[in-house]
Length: 429
Ligand code: CMC
Image (tube, rainbow, N blue to C red; front, side, top):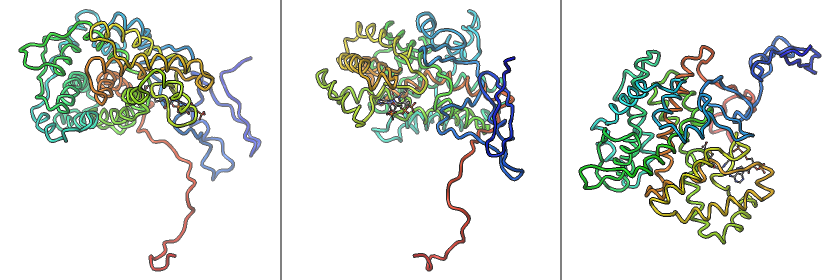
């Protein structure tokens, strides 16, 4: 009779243990009973970089990396990209269900109502160096917001939590646009709450002397779709940072600043910037074979390729590749697309990439669109952060409401020096 258990025999002692299997996992703590003797601490599992460890149960995002499937709350990413808006998707990710019309109107109103930033934020933005990386400004500004909203510490008060969520989703585009304007030496543009979420973002980025900015509808929609595609991705590095910092009961601004810092790195959200730098460095389609050779020789990575979970084409990359041509129809083609397509063609036929199941990920084509829209490379990770804010907040709230979660605190395997006595500096060799 099959049973949902795992029988383990400890060959050190000959003892046998039966461990329950639930949802395809055994509980790490069940290993602790496996001991050589009473003084033994008990068995642990060693899993650097969480390669095979589920840190939580979650109802938010489903990924099947082998099949290239991504769903938010059960809805396929392709359908959301085709038919939803970013704010509707953010509502879905946070609340678990698609909103009805009045729920969406209320949610949109609440977000729109919070788009402005305190005047002091503008003042301290002025103090950043003229060439400060926008991600550095974004991370510091999000952390600084905790000083403007001290009531955010009431993390177990659901109503206060909701207010901070509205504020964060609302203010991220304003912060991001101000980072961009700072870099350009341009005055900040205040939010225009008559525009859509993405239309207002474009206005804050691009408005010059005109009294009112009218966003191009194709670009406005493309930005919205990009935010949808980036909105969540289950337990990635930055979601894990959000949960980990949030588990100490820090306020959501501090936790989200940590998540944004995790996103900044070139192996995570910074990869879209690195991918464009790489395409620029390749320079021409004819140099692609030599570049692929250098990657295979270990002289660097193909940025925007590979993923810890996807061992197939990232479904977000498919949507973005198609979206790129819609944007090019409006703003003209970004010539880097030809190098990217050739790189993809050659890599997908090459044994090195086939054996390791390396396919384009979300960051391979997104930078090409952003660049075509007139955005500089160092703003790309900031755009990623705008969309991902919805996911970070949903992950954070799910963690807070999960009775099984406590402060995140991994164990270690200590391999350092055994006890030794202090030696006076004069006696050291
Ligand atoms: N180019 C060349 N080789 C690669 C690449 C790449 N982009 N990615 C992985 N490999 C090789 C790697 O060298 C290793 O080979 P070997 O077994 O011979 O040592 C093998 O594939 C497995 O790589 P890994 O580093 O163990 O895989 P990982 O799961 O730890 O890393 C990753 C995942 C995304 C960090 C990695 O694929 C990578 O560095 N990609 C480039 C950066 C990138 O595009 N990041 C964006 C990820 S998607 C957006 C997001 O969620 O942030």
